[in-house]
Length: 161
Ligand code: PNS
Image 1 (cartoon, rainbow, N blue to C red):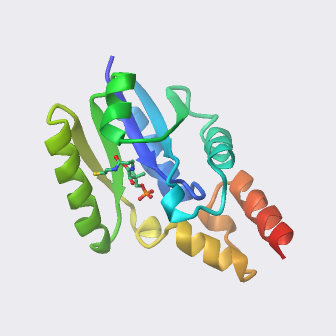
Image 2: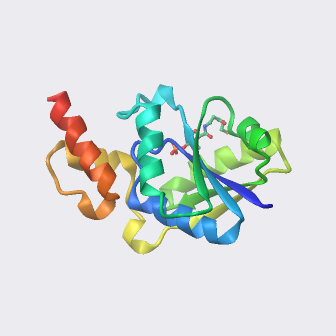
């Protein structure tokens, strides 16, 4: 049983995340989407809201489940008996940050492998933060997020005004 983690803050999940998760689900027996608490990032959506949106957005993927986590990713991987971390890699700007995390995770847990899946061109510059910004300013983000996220962002910003 090969189990992979796809970790992230998912504030909120985008079509780019979904692409990586769907592709990872073809490579292993089970994918656990690990939704990080990430309180220090001051997320727009609560952990519970982010988990629920990820659940709705991935309901069609039969070997994918969603779990919230707090603390270190390497500890969560051990707890779940996951041997691989799969992450998406977009433009060159991601490299430094991803390399740092991969190097540190490797030092902490050498048996945990990290794999990167390149984003396809249409998602190369897509990020949760840019989606939040466009949505906050009234732009149309439908092509960048699953329908549940589109609705949730509309509700969130309507309530914040
Ligand atoms: O979507 P993000 O915010 O880029 O994801 C970053 C995430 C959640 C994968 C990373 O911050 C993480 O693994 N956090 C858990 C805490 C941890 O293990 N920190 C040390 C990383 S070397």
